Image (cartoon, rainbow, N blue to C red):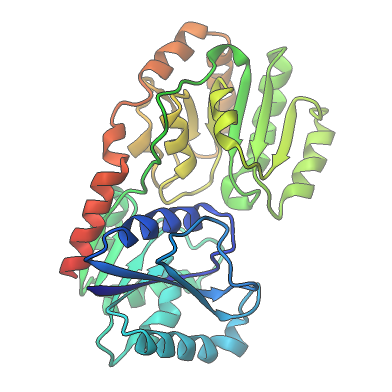
Length: 361
C-alpha cells in the first residue's frame, strides 16, 4: 500500500480547492488495498476540516495558526513537512496548490518521497504573489509530476517550462446528484464563490446595475463570503440594488439555490477549473461566463448551453444576459443542452485517472 499525503494550505477553509481535495481524498481512501491517505495542513488553527473526511484519513497540521509568516516561519514549515513524511513513511507528497512547492521541494530532497504538484489556478496567473511563478519553475525542475486542471493548461506548462518529470491533466469532478432541473421560470440569477478579487464580483455589480434595472421582477443572489464583502455592499447600495442583488453569505443548502434559479453567471478574472460552473451544469442551469483562463471553454459550449463572453467585457455580458432574460425558449434550449459532455467530469473516471497517476509516478 502507498502512503499518500496531500499538503494543504488550511483544511478548515471553505474554498473550492479544499472542497475538491476532500472529494478526491475521500474516494482514494476507499481504495482499501491501495492507499493510506493523509492530509497535512500548513496552517490550521483548530486542526479541523470544513468538509467531511472519511474516518480513515489522518488529518494533521504544522502550524496552530490562521496564516503563515513566510519570512519567520519558512524553515519551521519545511522542517515540519520533512518530519511528517519521515514519521509516516510517506511515499508520495501532493502539493495542493503549486505554491506549496516552495516548502515541499526542500522538505523532500534526499528522501524517497515522490512529489506531485497540483495546479489549482492556471499557468499565467500568480494570484497576487510572484512567488507562485517561481514555485512553478521549481516544480518543473524537481517535481515527479505536475497535474493541471485542464488540457489547455497542461500545454501552457509544456510550452513555457523545461519539464523534468511528467505533466498530466485531471479535471475536477462533479458530485453526483439526483436527476434534477433548474427553474427556468423563477427569474432568479445565481452566482457562487468567495468574495475576492479573483471572482470579479465588482464587475458582476456593474452587470447587475444594467440588467436588473432593465428586467423587472428578476433578482440576483450571490452565495459566499470573503474580504470584499463590505466593498460589494457599498457598491450595491450606490447602485440602488439592495433588494435585487443580494449577498446571502455562506449557505449550507446551496443545491436548493441551484434548483430554484433560472441562470448561472460567472464573472471570474481567472480560474483553474471552476467548480461552480460544473455544479451549475449538473443542475441544468444555462450559463453566462467570462471566458477567462482557464476552464470555462472546457465546460460551456458557446451558444449551445450558454454564452462565453470575452474576459472582463461588462457591456457584452450585460447584452447577452438581457437577451436570455427575455427569451424563455432560449433558456429552455440551453438548459436541455446543459449536460452535454458532462461525463468527462464524473467522479469515477477522474478517480481512475488519479489511481493511474499515483501508481505510475
